[in-house]
Length: 331
View 1 (spheres, one colour):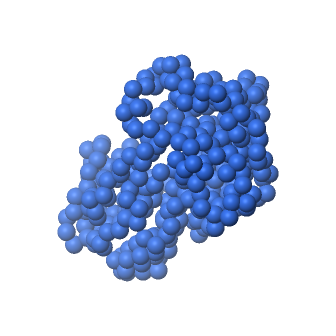
View 2 (cartoon, rainbow, N blue to C red):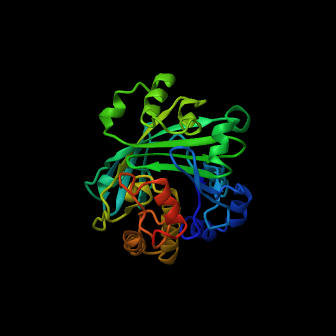
View 3 (spheres, rainbow, N blue to C red):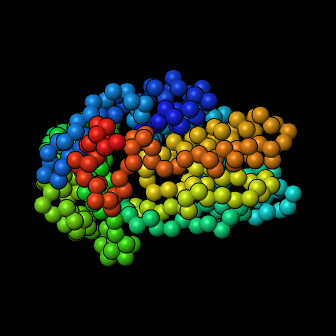
């Protein structure tokens, strides 16, 4: 699931004239938000009030965007394996399939481990100190009713310093859970995630004493648990203008998950397109204009505008603290 925000992601969809198609894939009611204490007590149950962050399935959003492009725009099975500068703004891209392409405009939209970024700077992602363990519960209303009731109709978060359980209801009765822990990579490396029972039991140990309907989101998974370490680029990353090449999305400003990544990538793409359209005969002017604005664009979580969001390791990262913040009492 992705919540697409009215202050960045939706602006990109408006620029592409795709708002009608977007509204057609929104899953109604999923902006509902619950905050639970460790014992399962519901401290906040915020109704879906059309707060400007409608939820869609990632696959449906991807399909909608691809279907809007002219046939042949996307070249499948062309994973970038390497790039090199040719001088005068030209670049050669080598793909995993062995073929190459020479271009006068190269946009690195290739994510955290971008092959294009080294053309612009030496920055590389570093481990952010936290990781997700991802699980799914299918047909939850009938097969996992206690967990389904805890999550409710939208999203649910049960926070605690150094750890938290976040889950949301996807289409149908699927519960998608992200368990976040502050641990070093070596701690996770000691867990055999190919052994579902042992891995989920080990992760659940970190929530010993928590309500069983919460830990069931871990131990009752219908899929093997997936470890997703969090990496980030240096905050405020900048680079000098290099002719013929730029970055967008995670390639440019990778951050630990905060709800903004996909939205910012979409906005980056829209703003780059606008700049190129405004300077059809001067790519460098377009890239300069685009990067100047992108460098100033905030990438931190702005979920609760005007309120300082507690980090996972903060002593204030509690259910009551989060409920107070959402309700405006933490200002």
